[in-house]
Image (cartoon, rainbow, N blue to C red):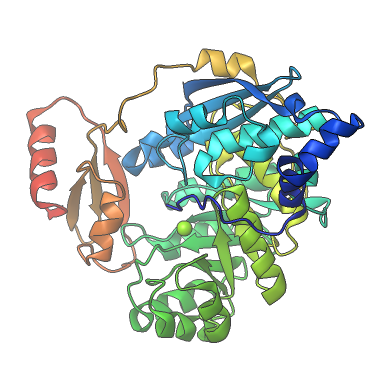
Length: 457
Ligand SMILES: [Mg+2]
């Protein structure tokens, strides 16, 4: 999670514009009468709507093991005094920032121009402010963010870890829709070699596959043989966080030893340490507009590539395209995850060819919210993160079997893996959600696995 950085203002074109409007020029502009009063941009209404978006079939059976709560999103509609409405979106239980009631109150009656760079407002509210200002000014969001340097920007398909067959079918679907990149998780409870073999068999050699290990390779000594075996496939292009990011020496060893790019989440270790030690080749950058532009400037000066990781449905992906248009080093394919969902929150899909989408040039986000989809999927906002009980079975070809239960914490399987509780990346591992059939056996297994798990059975 990335916290907002209220008050941390980078020197950007958009920021300069907002500052100019909000401070010394304001009185002069009003007095001269030559420029519309800032009241044009005054926020007069903020509506929030919670929706539950169903996953497509293949992501559904995989997301339901660990992160079923990614279904819940909040659409934010901000209306300005001029009558224009802008829209944004937050995944309520996976985001760098959920807009609070306090943030909504703080923005009401204020100029959207003055507020839109404040990352502490949270994802959907900030996005809606940018969309509204762009529409009111009749310019695309990217022109509020800086100078456009890319007319097209790369995107990646995304899935959580899946069976090898599901990974291959998703890669095929990604390719069919113009994607040239697939990002997934590398986990010890699946056979990563089989997954990559099967996926590479259905895509051309210039299709890219990225695996995010989230520390699960634990250290360079054990991880490198696995990474080097995967790297034999020309499609394997990026390893993300193979071992803990704080292990600078270990990451430097991995980065030096493989032709595959190594990516780390921006900020840990400090970006200057990364550049000084070359413990990775590039970054994963997420968060609010100020943080994204700030990181983008650092990456430009240090010539480090990165991908934008803004996760949500189509609305969030649309916002991400604009950052891709102005940040020179946003050269790796963006991870937006909107491919997970059955229905699109946009009236028109984001179209790709050769792995890239156009940076929108229409006003605001350049895409319209599909109000029918929002209405159809509207629900009461859950008070807390929904936590259905899940029992997960992992098997190996020699007959070993382990059960893991959801235990109310986020990333319960990942934590177990990073504590060394699963066999380490063995061939033939396979994992599935065990459906709750209402039986006493299921309940007993769930209870035992939750109390002591993961357990061998
Ligand atoms: Mg990651």
